[in-house]
Image (cartoon, rainbow, N blue to C red; front, side, top):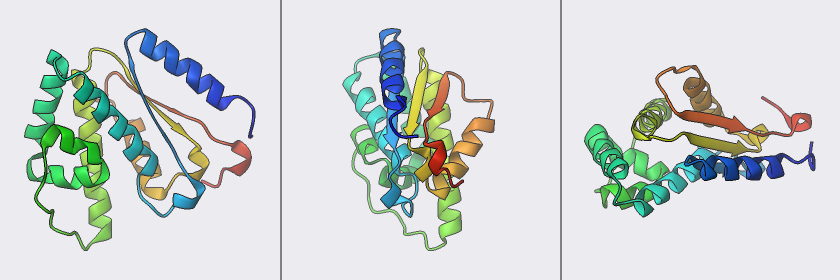
Length: 171
C-alpha cells in the first residue's frame, strides 16, 4: 500500500549498507514504462558504473573493469545499449548489429546481465545491494531476469531487495 514507509525503510537500509562499506544501487519501475525491458535494472546498473568510475584508482575497480572488458568482447555493445554508462568503462562502441529476433535478443541481454552481476559481485569485497522499487509495475523481461538471478547460487555478495504495493500486484 502507498504511504506505509517502504521508501523510508529503503533509505535507512541504504545508509546502513553504505556506512558498512557496501554498495547500494537502486531503480524504480514505472507504470507507464512496462513495455520497455529492464528500465529499473538499467538505471541501477548505470548507478553502479558511476560508482566504479568514481572509484577508478582502487585495485577492485581496475580488476572489475578489466574483467568486464575481457568477458564481454563484442557483446559489450549490446549491454551498453541497456547500460549506457558502461561506455565510461569500455569506451565508445561501433554500432552493434541489430537483432531482429526479439526473443533471442531478450535471452542474450538476460545472459549478459547475469554475467555482469556475476563479475561485479565476485570481485567486490563488500556486498552489493540492488533495491528495486514499485515491483508491481515491473516488465516481463525484468521479472524473468530477477527470477534467474534469484535461483543462481554463483552470485556471492549480491542481494536483491524489492518493494511493491501489494494492493496493485498483477504478476
